Length: 173
Image (tube, rainbow, N blue to C red; front, side, top):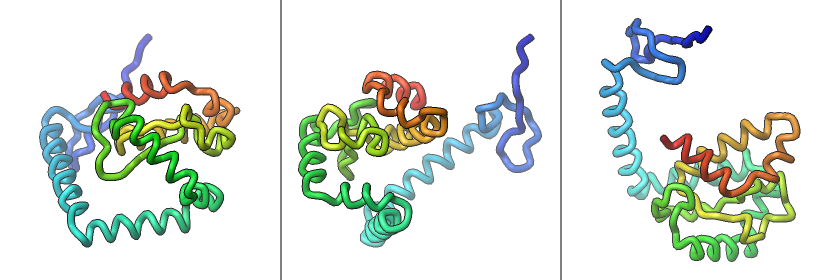
């Protein structure tokens, strides 16, 4: 017997039931889409202002000082890494290797096999690719869920570029 899991619509006060994995009922989906578009427009406008850029830089400085592993932080600030990052960004012509979007605002060069899982590949151009923010965030979330599994780091060290492309594209849809 197949059971469909249901939950309440996320709209405040709505009592309609929707499938698990769906956020809103059809009545509230349009309002949610409009809210998301408004948020993206406001966020993009904030990024283009001097104050917005200062806040983004402050956020990255805080992340580097508090959250990021000190060894990884020193690696990502090394001359070797910066040269390799620039090379890979140029090789990939500034295009996301998953969705094909242009990466213009910041060079996101990602390790296919994460730094902690395979440190010996950290400067290997075969282990590096350019990703846009959206694809990078999806990959990072997937890496976190894989890392929590038994032998997670070992699994991460052996996942192919093609597997990542397929998995990220499925999440985009």
